[in-house]
Every structure is written in C-alpha cells, then in structure tokens.
Image (cartoon, rainbow, N blue to C red; front, side):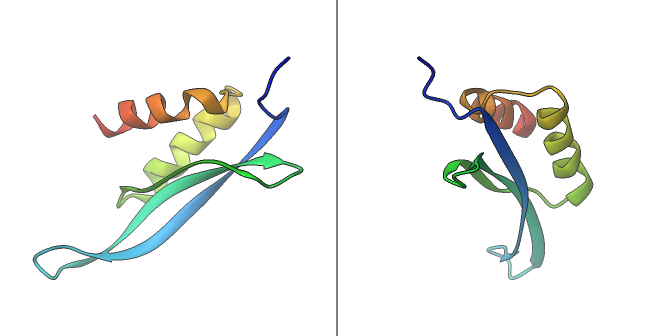
Length: 80
C-alpha cells in the first residue's frame, strides 16, 4: 500500500529577502501539495533569485512525474 498521494501540485514560491549587507532581492522556491487534499508534502524557499531557473526545475519535476519522496534530493542537486 502506497502512502503517497496519487497526484501532486507544485507551486512557485516568491518572497523578498534582505542580505546581511542590507541588499534586497527576491528569492524563488517551490511548494508541493497533495491533490485533492491540498496537504503540504514538501517546501523549499529561496532556492534561487532566478524565477526562470526555479520554473524550469518545477517543469522538470512535473514532466517527469517525479515522486515527492525524491524532491529533497533533487533540490539538493539543484543547489550544488
């Protein structure tokens, strides 16, 4: 029996941040929810200041139907 929901929804996160030097920037991340329950499964904020890079990551996850159990490892690879 699988505990993972059949479907997930991935949303782009966007938040403004300030560095220790006082510089402001917008950071992008992603949040993953179960469908239709809309229960949070995974979130990673401030992955990149590039909206396009995070959108490409989200597309890759969606197009390859990646299981939510792998998201943390994939995000770690994205950051390195």
